[in-house]
Length: 262
Image (cartoon, rainbow, N blue to C red):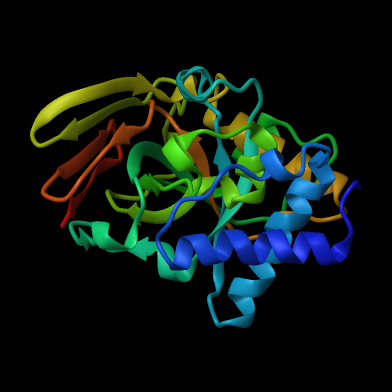
């Protein structure tokens, strides 16, 4: 690691303050160009510890930049991983206050909840499918703390992959009743279709994103516990929103999720 513990704590505090104060900052690597991948995840871990110390329970893990549309949109070539906290969870059909966000965007997601622990290295799609309790549709609201949504992958990892809010809804289904690759996804903004995709947009199979997450955790001496919520990543490109916008996501076989920005 290129950064010492004190510097990692300083950066985590800086990014957390940006989120809490609803202000943008320049990407971390502008000031720390030698920051390593391990440093980026160490900053994210410190950010998570700071939130948990304030009583914000971690309720799930998320995969970021897992679709080719998102990779192209953000100019990156590999996925990344983060976490979601209890305070980020918003009700299906509810309202989200834009005054608490910097420059929100939404993306449709296929989410899973596990019934068995998963461990890496060597985790694969088959193991993930066997461990899934149910599948559920969701919407992630991302809100990078970086000015103009300009960042590199190390900076976005440090910033907890732009996590801000999420909504779950629809109807849970067993994974063995579905072909996650061919599930059609429709993202509507103010009643108009703005994005279309299928589950295969996520690394060829949403379960592949979970396997990559498990192997990432395994490389760090961790596992994915039973009962874990995993957001497998945006199926579509991220769509900018503002106060007054209504978002509805329909996922084939899984129903719909909606929210309104105020």
